[in-house]
Length: 386
Ligand code: GLY
Image 1 (tube, rainbow, N blue to C red):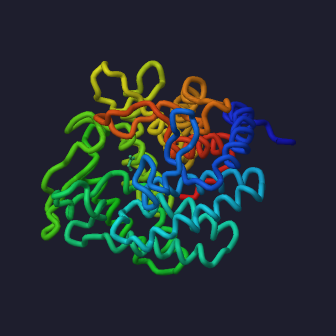
Image 2 (cartoon, rainbow, N blue to C red):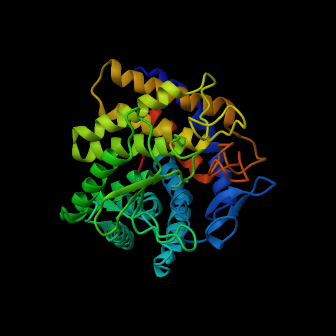
């Protein structure tokens, strides 16, 4: 940082980057042949892609391991990170053959892996995989309601043809990338039509967001909302808030459409005014006092997403307010919910996949991904793939 004064955020991030480099050096080597989602009772990553303790090779989080490797590669130049990322992408890409398993989450799977690989190395195979994934995502668009269908099957017997979910906002950058890459505006048109629908139908007046909205797949009419992974119908699942803040900020960055910036700010304001005194993010901002389920993964996405929102704003008080909000969440997470020992392969602890699940407070690989992404951003290095 010669010749330049470090910001308070850069000063905060510098020693944490050292810890990240140290932990990822051994954890990546130990787990180089796996695509992890969570850890076993001994703290060792389980190979999710082999179908252990998650949905198998096509599981929606399987791009975050390769994505983490690319973050570290950009930081350190370490060739082993590139090798692990590419091996992970090659393995993950076999899920294209399953087809029926793939959902709107192809963005989470292939943007941090294939698209990033292509951007950094020019690997032609990776470009093809990114465009393949973008075409699958675009193919889920329903022009009757202007939404991207989320899943093929939520559970046996459910009719989910008209279901869209807030999480999809963070899959849209794959479409923006595909339009830029091919000079074909179709992908961007679809992303914007979906984002317009999300801003209109998912956001409530107070800035909380619905998780699932069901449309009539024939007419496109709004039918109802569903509670999804949060506490209850009408509540505010914190990871849903996080996908919304981050996703709308990214859509604004690509399109400069004011409505997306307004949506991102509105959701971020809800989060920052409902954040508990402790600074720890609950699984749901409307959950009862007991049980006190946390979601550190939601916290990590919020830290990176609110920082992203600050980055698209001009210098001034508002930008600084969001930066401080993002930093407060990241700092609390760092001080209270990270593990830098060899006892656990993951860094971030106390994640919750869904409020009503039996299992709570365990490591989830994509919490590490977003935490690391956020620390790099706060260090002034934006390596994010979105
Ligand atoms: N996209 C699903 C989740 O956040 O758990």
